[in-house]
Image (tube, rainbow, N blue to C red; front, side):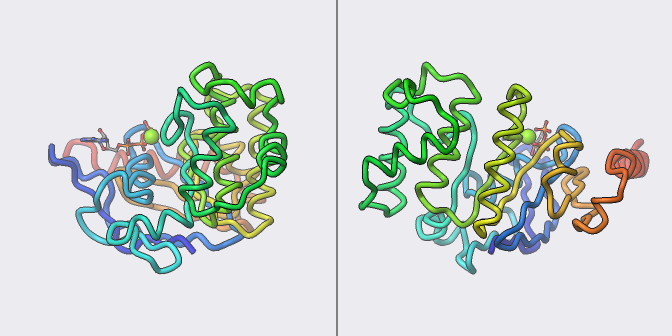
Length: 243
Ligand SMILES: Nc1ncnc2c1ncn2[C@@H]1O[C@H](COP(=O)(O)OP(=O)(O)OP(=O)(O)O)[C@@H](O)[C@H]1O
Ligand SMILES: [Mg+2]
């Protein structure tokens, strides 16, 4: 459903942030990308959502090239973050209404909006409050409400649980699990190895722009993910130190 093909990004300042990335996230799967600060995770997500152009390679969503046909591709996609996409002066209801319509859903009823906002765990008194008065976690919930209402097949999340309180973090991952069960393809980055282990069907480890290891669910279950992560990070950092 979501594919990257030999995807690379070199920024204008010469930094090669993503190098020849090939990955595939299927429907009904959560792919979690781990990696040190500066490894290239956010750049990867920015490429996936066409916030930035690839230097080489492609991102495909349902075989639509995200860079060549962004509007068509984005109908199938949602990007969840605390800030991007949301309008601070709009209420939660206005935001999800706006993005539902932008995503081609003109038929959504008021009841459906209420149901979705309840499902993501926003308290009812917040529905008509402006987004700029929301906390980070509340904004994330609003973002996932948009993904649900758009019925996006592909959901991208950059460190979705960072800064959430433990209960909200757990609830948020519960929601992602439900969406995966509904057949969505979910790609997320995180620094939380333990949560990754809990929720991921596949874990990738990224160092210096390359995915150096991809671990399937069968291996994740019995693995000491933290140890594997450290081993790879140290190995690749040592390989390039002094260069
Ligand atoms: N707009 C930009 N212009 C130039 N270089 C950039 C830009 N954005 C990121 N980089 C560089 O690209 C590399 C990858 O950065 P990126 O933000 O993708 O890492 P990350 O894995 O998301 O890190 P973190 O875990 O800290 O969020 C870093 O070396 C960073 O300095
Ligand atoms: Mg990042």
